[in-house]
Length: 398
Image (cartoon, rainbow, N blue to C red; front, side, top):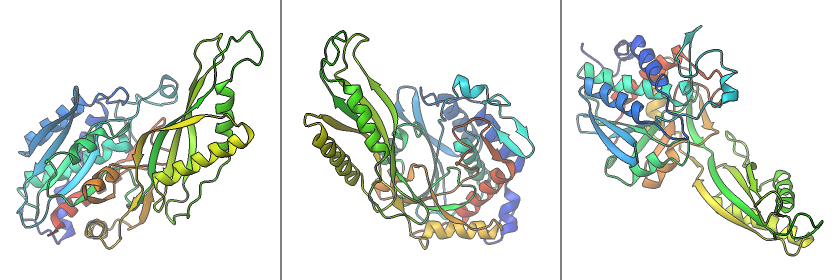
């Protein structure tokens, strides 16, 4: 088939809707919950799919039995490579959540125009869409201007160790732009919140619990700190797309034994940042809360142990990758909407290696992912694959 990359009807004809849906269903039916982190069978599926299309793949070991799959569709060589990144892991389905599903969370059921299952939106739908886009170009022997690289990564739902391993390798050398295939409701997302995790440990003094008032109860002091955190408004400028920065306590652990006054208690704090605010700014404010508590309790003692930091970011709407995506949406008559991503995506890791990016994919994140009856629209799955294919064909970057 002769393909004219400037004609939308040619690109639209390339994508087989049935194949997109099949691949997405197949991926959902391979459970890959993280924790514990079990992406190996998904990786095997992707390697098999790419091999069937004649697309070269490389396996990058990240952790024992956990590895990234990097597939490269060879281009004509007059444009820099374009990276698509999507993760293979999904969040677990708890026993309580499973009771609220109308179907098997890993069954890949289709009903009323939607595909249901864990990862349907986040992010096996996007992964399937880009796999089929690359595979279709290979089937039709269409060479894009530059190489197209798919990074199917591990551990995105935890510490993003898959993306971190990639930026420390030569597998994406020469790449300057990335599209992260997360659920955006087919909106082009040009900004993203940052995220930090930290353990805040409050210290006390052990004593025998039979003596009333003995020792220093670290749990009591931690609860005081947690109340301060909950009622504290972070200093920042509101972002037009992402709103405000905030933090909240997500876990609490403390105590030595049932009959001992606890000498330590740890709060896990999740922080969400908008562009313009840095992680260091946040911990200065936390230290300020410690100081305020010491005005009431002079011997209050607490420490901060940062577990993970992901900086917030935004990209200019006039950037080449944003324009390429926007043109593809318009070419395929998909309403063009610019917005911001309220979660975090691997773009923040790639930026550390100088790779700017944007987020675009099928499905809705808010009130859909991480919960029962996660789903993605079949129409959006196919549309996303078409947008990815069009962007691959039109991407030119010196």
